[in-house]
Image (cartoon, rainbow, N blue to C red; front, top):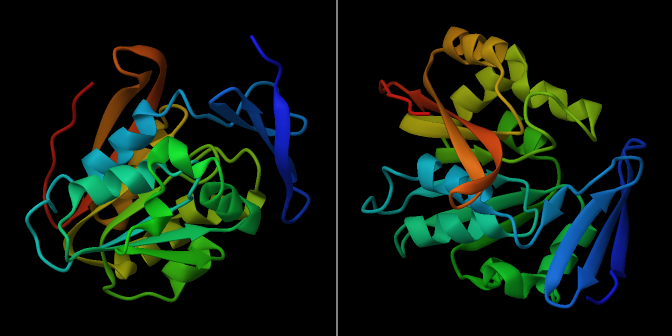
Length: 232
């Protein structure tokens, strides 16, 4: 097996560390300095796709929907959104780190089928929290794969998204009967309580990193104005 080759690096704002893009044959890995293991791997993306499928489950036949994806990553969530919504939809993807967008425009983009090139995609280079705070009744779904979920890993500023104030801002940014879906490395009963206090009907889903195997991740699905049922 060939060795990993570094293809790029990026500094995370506010002293969040150095992110590195590595390649080995056709496999890509994104890693963070000071953290053992990977942030992302191009062979492991089942839960990222589940985030999009759960968040966009009601949008397949609804015209002119608008979806916000917080965090581009390796593009798998965005690609799954585009498979889930009609031709009239718009998918806005907010990415804080410009180099991540460049990696997706380069060789990394082949992994997810180059979703940035889809005519329905709009790339917003900037903080998804600021975009949410400035929006009102703008989105039919908001999908967040930012940091490690409610328990932040790389950016203290990301914690605002999962606070009461951040959830209220997302509630205001969502259209009636829209969906908020949040990827998390693990469960958080306190976060579920916070979602419900904000006025969301909430369900919790456990999904696998790969079909039928791999790490278990959590998807919080929160509906504005419509009750939900969860599954494990």
